Image (tube, rainbow, N blue to C red; front, side, top):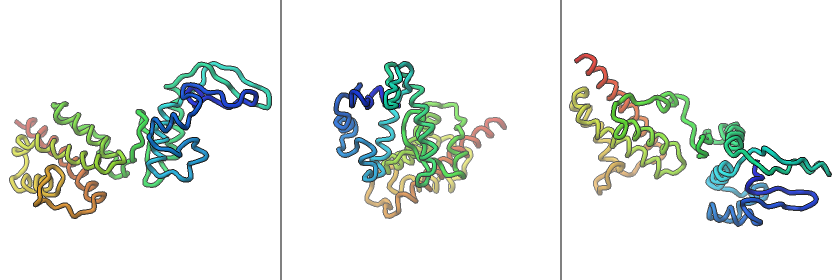
Length: 240
């Protein structure tokens, strides 16, 4: 799975290097800027969660399926490949890792792009999968999809950015939404965005909340509100 980059061990030749060079540990250090991660089997027990996910993403980037090579029979040494298929190797690695990641902690998955993402809770999965049926791709649809991806990443800062981005989409929709929301609902909606330290940075904002709880609530609240506003707008146009 990793011979193309990290080489292989041969009973006759010892370690046979490949693209990562003669010192794979140094190569991994250059990529992740952290020491003590390679080889995996020697350091796995000391990994932090960030170490683990970073190494999984690195392995995805360097996985490839052996296509052509020779089988070394002596002492059952194994296959020594010369040509590789990186796309097939990455997909095999991703599928195998997802069987494990789904049961780790709250549940994760390795995306087709090789990024470890949190799995959505079952009750919110349909909302994350649903597309926003708005004609403006640049200001609405693409921004919502980018916010969904940010929210599933590991960084708390990215999750906060995801909520801020959805707030910006709501701000963009505000003019249209006035026609389908009453004034009190509109005021309450943007009070959340503006007074709780998400979309702006002011001294009078409320910031004493548990980010992991608040951001989850705010993200799904905003996302549901965007869906509701867009569908109300669709309905109002159909009745016009």
